[in-house]
Amino acid sequence: MDIAEELQAELEIPTAFTIPIGGGIAINQTVVITWCIIAVLFVLILILTRGFVTQNPGKRQALVEAFVVWIQDLVSSNMNEKAQKYAPYLCSILLFLGVSNIIGIFNIAPPTKDLRTTVALALMSIVLVQVAGIREKKVGGWLKSFAQPIGVMLPMNILELFIKPLSLCMRLFGNIFAAFVIMELVKMVVPVVLPAALCLYFDLFDGLLQAYVFVFLTSLYINEAVE
Image 1: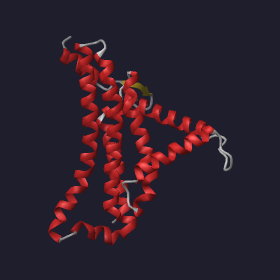
Image 2 (image 1 turned 90 degrees about the horizontal axis):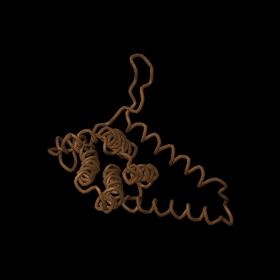
Image 3 (image 1 turned 90 degrees about the vertical axis):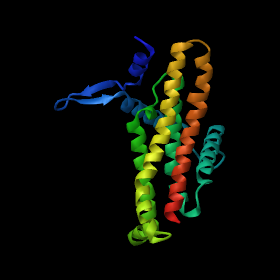
């Protein structure tokens, strides 16, 4: 098997198991890994926040609270006052994407390598952006915003409804997918030392960076929607 065939085999999303309903519902590896990430984060949150008190907090509570404040400040620093209410959602997405993008360190295929995952995340964010605009401007004001600043911009503003989710989706998917391909090629050509060094960049630094970029762009879109 040559390098191209090996790479193609690595890029395929295998079926993890099949639910025996009807003709069988195939559940692929991406879905299972996504469920596992959500479950791990949920359990960690329950463990880390157990026994919190309002007075004389312990070291664990102080560290957790400091982390929550830090990540909220990181996200909300890009948002205006009207958009602040959506910061918790963006913090959740940042945590999920951060973990999803860096699990390649443990030789686990990141869910964001699957285009279907990035499409779903992009659609969720863009729906939130439009809902934020409608809540702030009401339906009439939201519809009028498509003709601003002048009526001739109407086609372009409508086109943005499709461009924004596409840009969010492809930017995240493209960077994670490209990093995965590069790492697989490096492992095939130079299997010792170099992959470990590059892993720190592609799986750790670049993974966290792409998670932040996704959240940063979403926050900018929300700012525009509520202005």
